[in-house]
Amino acid sequence: MPVCHMINRNILRLSGPDVREFLQGLLTQDIGALSPDAPQYAGLLSPQGKALFQLFLFADADDVLIDVEAAQADALAKRLTMVRLRKQVAIAPELALSVWQQWGEPGNDPRTPLAGSRFLAAEATADATMADWHAHRLPLGLPEADEIGSDELLWLETNARELNGVSFTKGCYTGQENTARMHHRDKLRKRLLPLRLTGPSTPDAALMAGERQAGELRGTRHGDLQMAIFRMDYADQPLSVDGAAVELIRPQWLASGD
Image 1 (cartoon, rainbow, N blue to C red):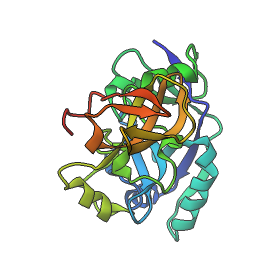
Image 2 (image 1 turned 45 degrees about the horizontal axis):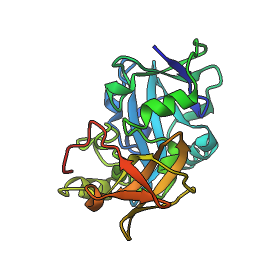
Image 3 (image 1 turned 60 degrees about the vertical axis):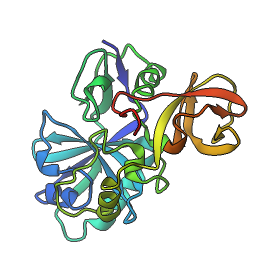
């Protein structure tokens, strides 16, 4: 099975007697369910419910390890330090471990078993590249941090509900009000979804449905695949980017007609 070293991710270690209580009031997931065998996918949101940080959580005894985009690691550490107030929580980079992704058979990835397994280790044998990983995860509709951005998209617009990135039964957390309100709507107006492009494209190009803008590209193009924030009203119409036809990819978790 392919194994990729996720060189775009860093790890923070949170330790101390108040760690779980601290994260429970801050993140979208129910930290009480976090265990060594059950990593979690979560967001740290703005009060308006927009995604600031995309996170994976791992239990290490009483500590919590946070897998975060490398370019955002310092900003996350500063934000956590700012909001911890008097809670006994130590926040430090975890330099002895790296993030790895394995796929080829169902695994423990908290978003979907189809993604394979995500794990932390000091060393592993990598036989796949980041390009291989992007080719696997994009058709599954799994966004990465550069596609989500920071304070740009609502957490549910990144498909966090479908990808097990939010609990609707836990207590309050930052951004809960708008997230819960959106959850109870019949449908999301916009979603972050993968496209298959057939021609050249410019960064952040508009996604067109005839003469109307249906969305825009997000993040980096990987081969002929790229994410776009997409208005679902146009899901059944012919689409194009920079004049070339594109195919909207419907991941398995996206119900037809949603």
